[in-house]
Amino acid sequence: MKRALGPALKILALRMPALAIPALAIPALLFAGTMRAADAPVVVTSIKPIHSLVSAIMQGVGEPELIVDGAASPHTYNLKPSNARALQEAKVIFWVGPGLEAFLEKPLQALGRDASIAALDDAPGLVKLPFREGGAFEPHDDGDEHEADAAHDADPGHDSDHDHGTFDTHLWLDPMNAKAMAAMITTTLVAADPANALTYQGNAKALDDKLDALDTEIKGIVAPVKGKPFIVFHDAYQYFEHRYGIRVAGSITVSPETIPGAERVSEIHRKVGELGATCVFAEPQFEPRLVNVVIEGTRAKSGVLDPEAATLKAGPDLYFTLMRGIADSMKDCLSSA
Image (tube, rainbow, N blue to C red; front, side):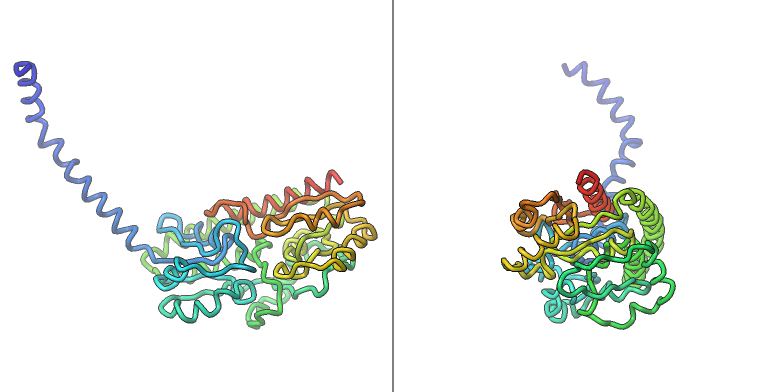
């Protein structure tokens, strides 16, 4: 055995200088990778759709943390100790604003003092739509599917009024609003981390192009069912509705924090019949039994919409899966009704 190993050991010894250089380089490369990860700023995001946009822009630099994870809803969320630690350590924090994530308002003041905090409902170029009171039961004038485009062009400063609490905060359900928020995210990250500015800006350009393509795709998906009225669980879809000319005939509850009473449910049941609503959509976070009560004895069908991505895995692709899912669910239910 020793005779057999002798020549092999000599050959290995002759090759050692050549092998040693890459071997010594491995720890240095690993150390460099660790330094790059350590250099990434600590970024915290509130909800999944925002986390998705930030993740796409941060690709190659780092990954943002998410507060409202899993199937939780920002409407009913309670801050966890781990969330509080993340806010305290953050260099940058992104949220929609106090109109949506009310649970974050005081913690941000107490824990986010050292962070750059960006409320994306202040992003330049946003279309903002007022809350609809009492449920949206009147027929909509959907003759101009480009109403949202006109709002962008006619009132570019509409975002600057800081009218928190007076507008619908489900802003991300219009890809053009997502583009406006992505621009603000990019500006904020570049200011906080100029060393990675080129990466952020390159990713933002790619995201912008993908959002334009998504917008065109969704228009094609919902085009065949635009004229069919339907009922949603809560009035969260105005931006999708205005962008694509679809017809939401009403909501089971105005606010998801308030479970409707028997009188309200009876009113919705009656309206489903009167308006000829073809589908009633539940949401994953809230009581689906109410939808069954509303459609009982009618010809309407039920479906599920997920405006806050409760059932989706967080990540850079989530926003696109979310928006396609809403469009596909509407088309599937309304086409078969």
